[in-house]
Image 1: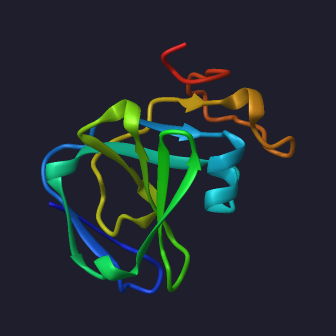
Image 2: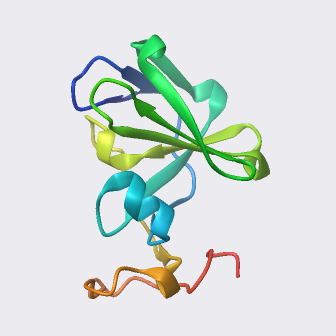
Length: 133
């Protein structure tokens, strides 16, 4: 089990099972949602992610067609990226995990729109758009 929580600790969740695909996303929306150079997410089967506290505090924001982002209404922590294209999965913001997820993120995506003040120097593969491109 992997535990996670928002900054104020009022929203808490558990992940059972393995995390799926992961990436560091440099698109402008992920940067703004995280207030950082990029957002890092990993996919989880919906049935393997359980909110254990604070579900009533989770707000949803439709950031683009077919995409909903969730966050804590009290502290603003980014929690999830939910895409209609990936039915049955939710992408969890890895920054809100309290436990080691036991994975290494394999690449950077949407680097064509990365922040101009960021230099990626970790040696991981970089994709101008999604890694599927």
